[in-house]
Image (cartoon, rainbow over all chains, first blue to last red; front, side):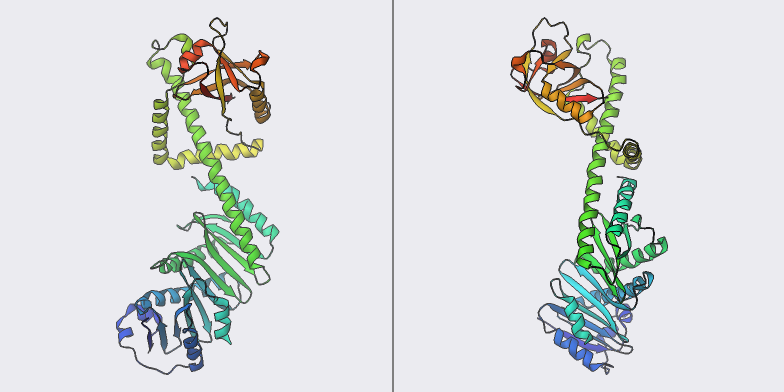
Length: 136
Length: 299
C-alpha cells in the first residue's frame, strides 16, 4: 500500500486552507522525536491507518491512504478543538482524548504536552491500548 | 410526530436513568437540527447548545467518506459520549467512577425502547382519530347527499372498501400537509388521557367468526347474536365502558354496524359462530358458512 510521510511547518488549519503548504513541505526537526518514533512503530500495525502529529512548529503526517490527508487533517483538528471545548463545558477535568467512531474506522485524538496527535485506525482496533502505548 | 410526546416520555426516562446510575452527571437528547428533546435538570441549555454545535461540526467532517457512529470525549474526571439513538442523539456525561458498560447498556436499551413505545402509541392514536373523524363526517354528510338511495333498513351500512381506502388516502394527504397540527392535537388528547385516566383504551379486538343464519322471520332484523366468550373478552378489556354495537366486516369489504346480543341456542355456544339475520347477511353480501370479522364499538 502506498505510504506518505512528510514533515511540514504548518498547522493543520493552514494545511486545509493552503494545500500548497502540503506540497511545499519543509523538513523541520520534531520537538519530540521519541513520540514520532513511537507513532511510526504503531503505524506498522495492520489496524492502524496512519497518524498526524503536530507540535508548535512542525507536523508529521503518515497515512496509509495519502489521498485522505485533507479529510483526516480536518477531522482530527475539529475533534481536538471540540473535545477540549466539551470537556470544559462539563467539567471533565484535564482533557485526555476524543474518539470519533465511524462505520469502518475511528480517530483517536489527544494531546501530549503541546503535541496534537491524531491516530486513525480500523473500527475494531483497541484505541485505549494505543493511547496508553503512546502516553508511555 | 410532534416532539412533545417524546419529551414527556424521555424526560421521565432520563430521570430514572439518573436515579439508577448517579454517576451520570448530565444527560440530554437532541435532534440533528439542534432542537433539545429532553434533558436533565442539572444541564443548562447553553452547555447543550455549545455541545450540539461542536458535535455537528465533528459529525459533518466525519461523514466525508464514512458514516458517523459515535463521539466520546474523555477527561481526567469523567467522559462524554454522544451516540445516535433512533432519530435522535443521546449525550451522557459520566463521572470517572461510572461503569461505562453499565451506563451504555442502560441508556442504549432504555431510550430506544421508550422511543419505540411512543412511536407505536402515537400512530395508532393518529389513525383512530382520523378514522373516527372520517366516520363522523360521513354520518353527517350521507343523509344530506343521498337521503333516498339507501333502503331505510340498511341505513347502518357504512362505506365500502374502496371508499375506506379513499378516506385513508385523503387523510394521509391531510396528514402530510398538516402533520404538525394533527399530531399536536393527538398528543394533547393522548397526554390528557394518560394523565386523567392513567391508561389508553386498547384497540378493539377483531374476532373472526363463521356466519350462521338466524332465520328470515326474526323480529330484530338489526341484531346479531355473538358467542358469550367473545362478549366476555370485550367486557374484560373495556370494563365499565358501554358496548352497544358491533362492526361487522365481510372479506369483500362490506361493513355493517349493528346491535348485538348473546347466542341463546347452546348448540352454537363456543363454536366461533355469529348468528345473523338474512337482512344483515344481504347487506354484507355474505351467507351461512362464510367468514367475517367482528369488533366491538366502544363508547
